[in-house]
Image (cartoon, rainbow, N blue to C red; front, side, top):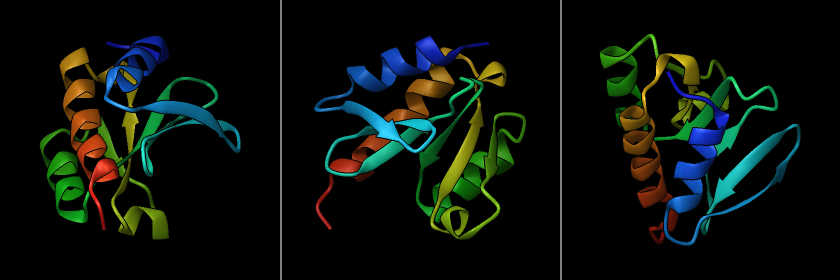
Length: 104
């Protein structure tokens, strides 16, 4: 079980990561946003590829679920922090971070 402080610490430890307000959330980004943290600190949205999203949601449905809209079809996935451990967060953020720093 993890919390928003753990999520923030891990996100900010990634090379070049900064945080910034994003509507009612906090965004974590490098060249592009790779994750956002909900205002209540209970969940985060993480940017995977659609294939990565599908795998995460099948393997760990208690932690990951696709966002049910156009953002979700692009790979944005909600992570329930209370269901995740620190290793889950590290793996998810490192994966999303790689895509955010890659050039298009």
